Amino acid sequence: MRYRSGFDPDGNLWDAIAFDLRRQRQERGISLAVVGDIIGRDRSLVAYVESGKTKLQEKHAIKIDDAWLTGGLYTRLVKFAKLGHDASWSATHLDLEADADELRVWDLGWMPGLFQTESYARAMFDAAGTEGAEAGAKVRVMRQECLYRTPPPRVWALIDERVVTQPVGCAEIMRDQLAHLIELANRLHVSVRVVPKSVGAHAGRDGSFKIMTMGGVDSVYTVAPGGGRLIQDATETNSYRVWFDLIGDVALPKDASLDLIVEAMERFS
Image (cartoon, rainbow, N blue to C red; front, top):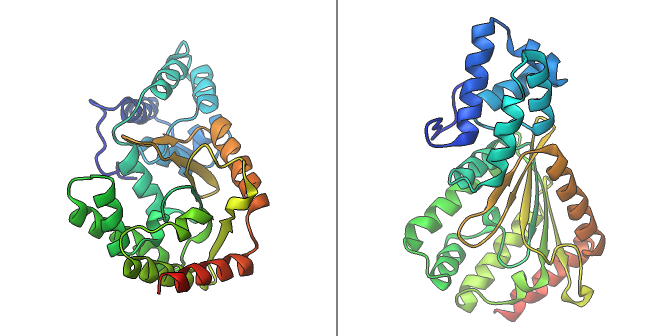
């Protein structure tokens, strides 16, 4: 498998781990399947790790260290890599999003990026004082091509009520955005549910996140000012599955959510 776009073992510790893992495997003359047997996973996961498309999990690093007698090298490297911010997280998360079989999205403040119209995205970037709003909006729309591929990803989206009621840009922008959201919500592979503000405190109030599932493996991207965080260790990603379910517990059913979105759209008319 080819290295992911932007793969940089000299400037990125996660990529250095992936590069060295492939080098060590090839020097030992063993296959991806053999490494898969060591960590108890399919060969495809090893290929994703070696290409930089997913990160080596700590529990798998421990098994490799034991099998290859590295003295705990990969375990130490993974622990160190998890402590720092990686500038490539955003780009890697977009690659994972594009290839995901399933997407679970919780958005607290903005319309999910995969659902945004170009005008909404431009108004959002302008409001945030982001340079290059025009180019950013076009890139945001290009990301949405994954929703129309064959087969499309299964998408579950939970959004805060304020996302559909608080204006971003002018009334026309919001009306068009909500109409687009309604069109997507009526697709068989997309589920959109709204968490009403009447719920009060709930598990999603700490911030937005996205769970991207490919080949049964979850990766999580959390949103934060100045750059988000990509999480690929199962010991952490499992917690986000739980939090997503807890948020879903307080969300409106699909039909009631759609009614709320339609009512909000009509108020922008």
